[in-house]
Amino acid sequence: MDFAFISCIGNRVINEDSYSVKEKNGSYCFTVCDGLGGHAKGEVASKCIADTFSDRFEEFDGDIPGFFSAAFDESSEKFRKLADESPVLELMKTTVVSLVVCDGRCGWAHIGDSRLYGFCDGEAVLCTIDHSVPEMLVKSGKIKQSEIRNHPDRNKLLRAFGVSDEKPEYETGEVKNLNDFDAFLLCSDGFWELINERNSSKCLKHSHNAGQWLDGMVKKVERKGRRREMDNYTAIAVINNKGGR
Image (cartoon, rainbow, N blue to C red; front, side):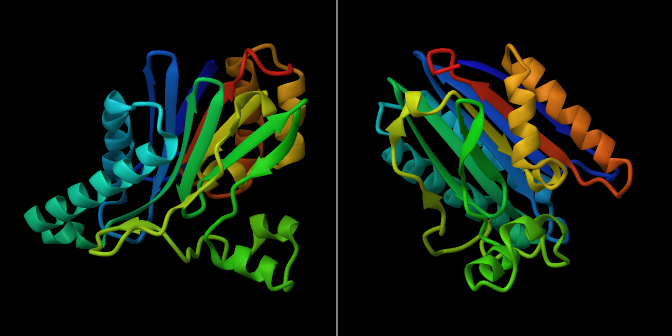
């Protein structure tokens, strides 16, 4: 696997995004988290998840759904311990999107509006569905998918990972054949709001490796971001060297 990553503060005071990349015996775990602004210590929440997923992957045994279940359970336990130590952390929340690649298979899990895109023959064929108000409006037919990026409620989430005694409401994708995809992109909303799937695909088609692909996308994100107040943005670009590219 060829991969590259970036995490930038944008125009904000604090970068509440976090990411982790972990490799074990040829298997990989990629994770992006976006701590929620307006909630206590979003940067603590996102880093806790990213680090926990990375650490937990040390024990990965090839069971992708089992890994996600254990990683989210362990994250819940750590969140509760942090909140017990400091009450200000009781309100902390974060989005999560994570991709695991193992033995010619891939699987993913997410909660919130950080996204995973999958590409085949240079075209986006997979996108996780946001747990957000605009996505709910798309499902009800009130707006089009293309309107999410500029919707006034685009940052209002219906689900996020936080301190709770309940089982976290994350969503998992069906484990797939890795060679169904030649590339993946994991990113926070500060990234995908400023670049659409068509432009991500265009950058991919003109790139020879993950670094070039990410650099091309970042240039488009930063160019469009000059016209607005930029959020933190984080992305991991992954290219499957054994895929169809």
